[in-house]
Length: 263
Ligand code: HEC
Ligand code: HEC
Ligand code: HEC
Ligand code: HEC
Ligand code: HEC
Ligand code: HEC
Ligand code: HEC
Image (tube, rainbow, N blue to C red; front, side, top):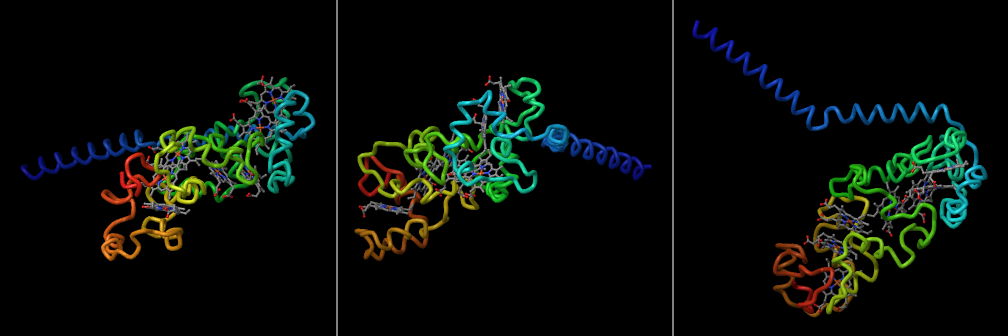
């Protein structure tokens, strides 16, 4: 009798545990992939029905974008999507016939990659992998888009990066304002661009760094004059910590207090 009661209690506990797991799955996003799949299916259905109309048709209503696009890398290299055969505007916006037949409009039969980068990944498959690395800008999470850093249409861009004309850094300062300075002691490394130290799509290293240890700094400081290079104590410190750890060069982006970028 006692064991049976015990068993029933055990079963009840098991049921509760299973219920909790089910609820947990539900909340942790177990349902989200289903919803995302549904979106994909809807999009595919629409993509199937719509046909390509060509860039000249788009130009009739979007003269501004048409002119801007001619300045872009994508236009200059005549990208044609090998899978779909799309050209021009429709490589990024999808087949436009439904949009055009309805006289255009927001959300009318056309893809806006600002809301969903999936169409960019049809060609830039490697970028999707980068955004899946442990430390990344939250693009796949929908909190940011490629267009926060890239101007796909081609106005105000530096060649081959599609970022700001005034260099890559300008684009970063839009959000990371504290890195702009001016600092009394600036770090010359920043002149080379934020991307000399950061892999901005994504990285296996914390803070999206290119390297997780002193190699990040030694790429330049093995040759650039380094006043403490001969100090054996300094060499010892590399082995126990990174160059930017506490009590070392914490102010790696520039400092108003320490010439040696300590704090
Ligand atoms: C008959 C005129 C017309 C044609 C042709 C046309 N559009 Fe549009 N489109 C519009 C209008 C109107 C809007 C609404 C926004 C606006 O007023 O700019 C719009 C909006 C858009 C948007 C934003 C949609 C959104 O949900 O954010 C995109 C992208 C777009 N068009 C791309 C294209 C492309 C690519 C083509 C060619 C395949 C095209 N359009 C052809 C009239 C047109
Ligand atoms: C390389 C990809 C790419 C190509 C090619 C491209 N676009 Fe776009 N387009 C985008 C992205 C990304 C956005 C979202 C930009 C944003 O709102 O920040 C966009 C936005 C738009 C919008 C909405 C603008 C707004 O203010 O909301 C229109 C209209 C548009 N594109 C038309 C065109 C036309 C017309 C062409 C061809 C002449 C074209 N695009 C070619 C990527 C592209
Ligand atoms: C946080 C800003 C940022 C975001 C968001 C971003 N990029 Fe970039 N991307 C850059 C910078 C900066 C470079 C230039 C890298 C360099 O100079 O080394 C670049 C370079 C590129 C290049 C050319 C160089 C290469 O690595 O092949 C491509 C293609 C590209 N990005 C695609 C994308 C796509 C697609 C998305 C969205 C899914 C995206 N990027 C989102 C900042 C960004
Ligand atoms: C039809 C294929 C295709 C699509 C779709 C496409 N790209 Fe590209 N893109 C290319 C090719 C090819 C290059 C040149 C080679 C390279 O740098 O990878 C390029 C270059 C780039 C570059 C770097 C060169 C520069 O100066 O522009 C960026 C940034 C970029 N693409 C972003 C995007 C974004 C964002 C989208 C989606 C809105 C997108 N691409 C959609 C094929 C494509
Ligand atoms: C549109 C805004 C925006 C732009 C533009 C932008 N970032 Fe970011 N950045 C973010 C957000 C949001 C995060 C994620 C913060 C988080 O996860 O807490 C982030 C995170 C980072 C991190 C990691 C921070 C940490 O504490 O782990 C680095 C490094 C970084 N960004 C560098 C850059 C560089 C370099 C550029 C220019 C190529 C850039 N960002 C452009 C919004 C932006
Ligand atoms: C000389 C290499 C180097 C350069 C160049 C560089 N960073 Fe960093 N960055 C670092 C290091 C190292 C860290 C980690 C600091 C830490 O963990 O305390 C970091 C951390 C960050 C962080 C997250 C922590 C914080 O301080 O907010 C952001 C955001 C960031 N960098 C943005 C930028 C931007 C924007 C640029 C270009 C203006 C840039 N970085 C240029 C080395 C660099
Ligand atoms: C792209 C090359 C480059 C990289 C990478 C780089 N630096 Fe520098 N750094 C410089 C240059 C150039 C100077 C200025 C010349 C000088 O003072 O020797 C400088 C100066 C410094 C100074 C001031 C020198 C002094 O008098 O104390 C410190 C500290 C410093 N860097 C630390 C770092 C750290 C830490 C890292 C890694 C997170 C790093 N640097 C990565 C190029 C670089």
